[in-house]
Image (cartoon, rainbow, N blue to C red):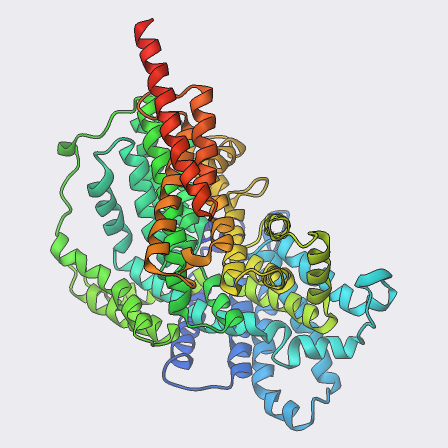
Length: 636
């Protein structure tokens, strides 16, 4: 009997905000659940208790990922599911992973000599990776590996500086599948360890009820302040973003509550959606967990994860401060009423529920004392189970299995993006494309770091259209980041710059995934939400330039006085940029006052003592000008 029956399907919402279809069939659901559970157990064991060869582990992760994607994203023709075809692809995907496990030792002993079967499986694996990427990530990410593969194979026919000697079909597929490059390269190895474990941790933590606790705490902290619901959105989305790693999933989780509350409180729908989208995107740069690209950054830079976390603290604070102040002055200008404190209920059972903060604390402490991120993730999962056991709603076996299944499904998009990006990285390493582009960016910029940063930011926004931040970061870090370091940027600042703009793709038109997800919840036009998001996040686009020119903000080569001065000037800068953008301080600002405050904010952000002093003086002048205008209006 067919597992799929026409007209008997229902839609499920996956963690990336995409609507996927899953047949309403008990047998198929049991198969998917069993594979997810096996995947979760394998991932936990091989990253904690049992050592396995990195290539074999990556092969099993590839097999599990392909198997689940073909089951969860069914192929349809004219609305009819082609289950036999998907089952075949699912089994073949699993076989591609198992084949790697079986032949890795033989291939190494034979001095990398490929058999005809090796070539067939290599071609099959790369083909399935492209198909699965199209299903789980999107067309844009699926096309890129194909284009890079063609570049590797046809390089000798390409004229000019981008031409190269070319590679045979056998050698190309060997490098892409049979060794620890290509689909089994650094991106997949990081995804199969750090990324997978932290997403599983997020699934367990979310199932324990932490999202509701975050929202309740945010409501208690900011609910009664001007623009309270919007500030609740900022705080809760930032907290959720630390564990979700996905802006669209964050919007779907917290936005379902905060966006209607903002609209009810008086904010226009497009603005409400933009605040949620911008706040949720900021969750990807919010320590301690940040987005999955942060783990990739550890591998690129060769530094401890705790160093990345410490470097991200001040920029993330500036980002959320700018959004918070924008909302604050927007609420004051619009005359939006605050929520009465009596209307905000106390946090129920807070003493018990506050134990759910322990997993995050445990992860931070583990990394700061020197343990690896993998060990810290495992500690976080153990502490999560302990904290969950102490809640009123205890974890049952069913709930625990559901949490693991949800975590595995949440990881698939990131896993697939990293696997596909591995092909791009592999081609760049084979052909030397990265070095060619680095040389030309340096040449095109004329030796100006600012011009190189602008080109890099533009490249990030263009390349990241429709891509997850992790995939975009891999792509741009491989191709472009080296050019910034060659021009004098500190390595961690260059990679953090790329990471930030990779995350900003979620709110940058024309493919602003977080903004479009928020637009659906707000009932507003997607482009209106995206344009408002650009305004609200405007200071955030300047922050990456700020820490490249002044790496003190990344806690790099700093002294306490210099750090305090730079941080204070930056805080003042982002606050007055929000004031200039909204056009309100104590009263609506005229054009002259807004211009003065905007220029002053830019001077404060520039990492020079003299510009900061000039900026502070201009703020005083702007306040005097505004006071004079208010006095004149009062007299009239």
